[in-house]
Length: 339
Image (tube, rainbow, N blue to C red; front, side, top):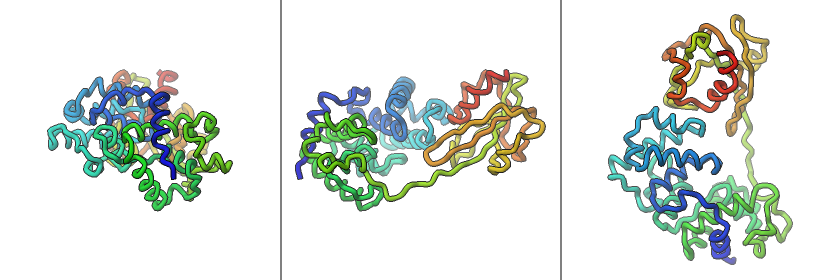
């Protein structure tokens, strides 16, 4: 089979995205970009990367930061385990490795928060490792190029594709190849309405020849969405304060701050309201596989039985604490209406 690497790289040299972390081979800056861009759009991730680099120019600066500072810097990006793992790994590299990253993906993958994709991306871009990356964009480009209907969520499919891509990348510049195939998937070989007419791989794309481009890639399993029903409480705001507490250091939004909340049944959530409290509004907050159905109440005390860790802060100090995107939505939608 023809190796598409040369055509990909030629296209990338002209049309590749101009991103700040592509102007360096500093593994710290590349690692930071890869962690931020997990589950994050580039247009959003770019501003966070720039903020982190400005606040923490080196990995030693990040390692020295306290937990709350890092979580506040991450606020709004979601998937907060990334921030906790980022901080943990920074401390390991700064304190135990003299600030030097391992120079191969096999050792990089041993660090917390660095999986197969991230290890190979850092290894190839920062150190020239001949290691191809596989993510959703790469799966889509390769599945279509090969007209491969094997389910991409099957381990054997990933294993076979990894072997093939590694054979392609060994002949070319690894950093350029990996960034080229990711850009092609993001810009040209998109999930819907791909721009096949301007694709550099068009002449050898089997899916295009077979007329099955939009059928690929194939997934064997579809994860079922779940729903969670929550009531959040804005307490003390009539006096310019707000009741908050820190979430546990495990589970969703671990280590972030929140206003107190109760998880209730769907039936209870759908009731007219809660006696003694003013219902300010309701909305749906969407996570990857979870729909959070949220109602927001105002009152003078929290009706739940768990008051551990609850304390008041002045409302003006909200900016000093790291909250989940769901809580920030509550502040944005309802605080200015009731204060």
